[in-house]
Image 1: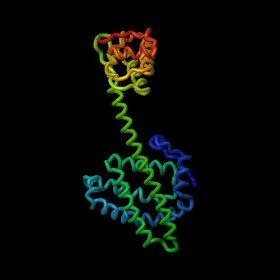
Image 2: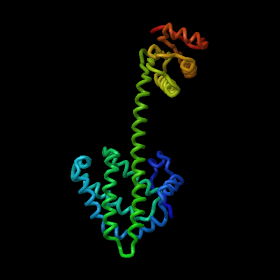
Image 3: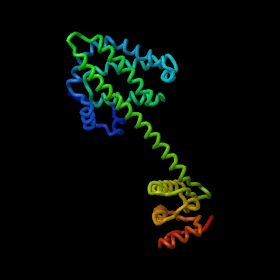
Image 4: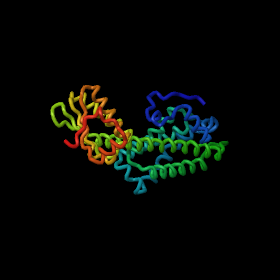
Length: 292
């Protein structure tokens, strides 16, 4: 099987960690081999003859169902997707399954995800598409062609394509989740300028290692940007202060000192003060105030 590299950067494939080795593993799992690709490549002229018929039959079903029709709001969209579907259909019979093929199938899934088509409708549409295609295979193949062998090769490749499309959906969902998490982290570390060269960070909620790193990064960036001389960290909204959190505060204090500013920790309740003393935390390097 000859492999050809995709001309463009494979960013989506890279994010999904799909490389040549992963591709070989997946092809082996789907039992797609050189015989399958050669069998389909031999049917390329047949595919070109039936392309319009298959695509029109497919969209007649899709557009006739109210749940799937809503993803195609106008004639221009329908014409565009029919053209793409025609290219997809012929691509099944190119006789190759390399990284360029993977990129194309990932983009197909990505496009449908961006249209807002949920996976349940996408997979349902694929089933209809496969039914139409297999109907044509069972009734109109060139003489001497083994319909059963062609059937199995098509099912393997279409199933492989579907798995890539679902990967694209998963990647999009993970990216959306990542953006939401980043926005939440940003909101959870709101550095406020309260006076010339004085910044305030009111911390609210639990602090884990990831959030502590975010706090330190945000604080250092803002101190440098604002040329701050004092950084006030208010921990009145932090429900529990333990050894780890105290350690994070000390590390942040030290880091802020290195960029030329002083850190003041405020909002320390009587309970938190007792806890810090009981834990034996060394607060000699930390400037503290009970309240602002």
